Image 1 (cartoon, rainbow, N blue to C red):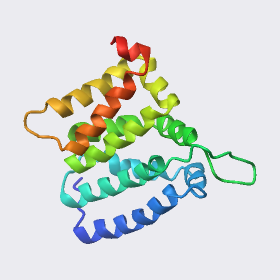
Image 2: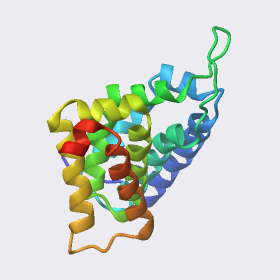
Image 3: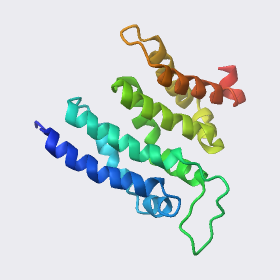
Amino acid sequence: GNIEMNSNHSNRCCNALALLQCVASHPETRGLFLKAYIPLFLYPFLNTELNSRPFEYLRLTSLGVIGALVKHPHPNVVPNAASCIIPDCEVTEFLVKTEAIPLCLHIMEYGNELSQTVATFIIQKILLDDYGLNYVCKTSDRFFAISQVLTKMIQDSNKKPSKKLIKHVVRCYLRLCDDKRALLA
């Protein structure tokens, strides 16, 4: 049926998501955030086909929460039993295993420019992790899915991508070149 959301409803949801973004970005809480599978509750907002301003705002804020998980690297974190601090590779593994990549690719292809930029940033961060790069390059279908979306974003004659978006796309391509299989494709 018809789903309607006004700006007031969207703003209230986005305010709650802003709090989740703080939890997602903090090294001591992001592990618990993932262990509770909270990002999965955001995926329907990422997967919506509705493009009205309230839904776009909700999509962008949800992307911001996922982006917060990958934005602040904590590479020297040594997890222990008493701590909920998790290394970056576990964040990447979580996002890969919960199908965040196809959601981001869909937004990269059909979202507005701001959402595209955040989704491309998330893909870039996933690729920067060896687990993410290996996952994407393991099959030709996965590699070509990402490659086609990246190419379409740059070649779309109806849109002129921002410098920030182009920067993230180029960084994705550069990272893909670190894998021999992708380099040969």
